[in-house]
Image (cartoon, rainbow, N blue to C red; front, side):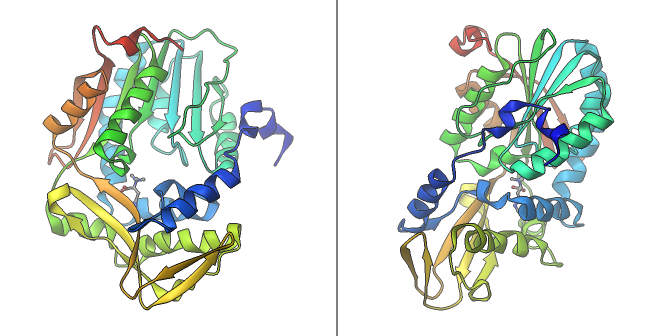
Length: 334
Ligand code: AVJ
């Protein structure tokens, strides 16, 4: 780590505590339906694999969000004027953000928030070089837990929370509402929340997007076990698990699983995890919405839909949300 990156922000040191993560991992692996949270995908290697997923021909999401943002975001962001603080939970490589950063009127602040410390640092460093007029304040945090926004040197007029990649779809309805409420609080009075929501479409298109021919999504899924082996001294046999990602119509979601090919045991953190043949670890849900359903969720979080940006074929939506009138969360300023 270079001293340059360290100078970006002292908050970078606040990485999530690792024994807390191990406790969460063990809770998931000892549940009746075994599960692991998708946030565990994103170590350095997992973040890189995700970037490769975004380039896959079958993975339509990233390209469409990018096109939607290129069409609508620059004018919208420029109109906001100077003094904007852009906060991005789960910023990853901040690639989708560039179209916004390019349009921000200086002075402005960008707060990328990501769980992958080394990846966040590397990205933040390159942003400092690329955007000398924007104050870059990275925060290493698990955005599903409360975190503090770092103090900016510049006066801030308005906060825009940016969550474009459809990660909201990883969460169940109640969790998604809680997350939207948290974003409303971060945005504060007069704030804006921009959320990407993938739309319901045919099984064929959806299943192809999560079962790519090159096998990158399978590798991404299996990297979760590789990571447990690397970081927690676990002994999962990667060849004994298989990637599966069916569209589950009744719950309107893709479910990603790692299915045990045979009866087996694995050790992690002093515990033994027993698998029957065909038993799975549920690693991710990717919910797909229609706009009415999404608006109802936003409303439950105290947010009103002001505008929806979509591609011509209505495959993906970017929702512009404002803190609703009379919502108590609107009064909480950050
Ligand atoms: C990063 C959560 C938006 O749900 O499409 C991609 C993650 N998983 N392929 C998604 C993912 C498998 C992605 N999000």
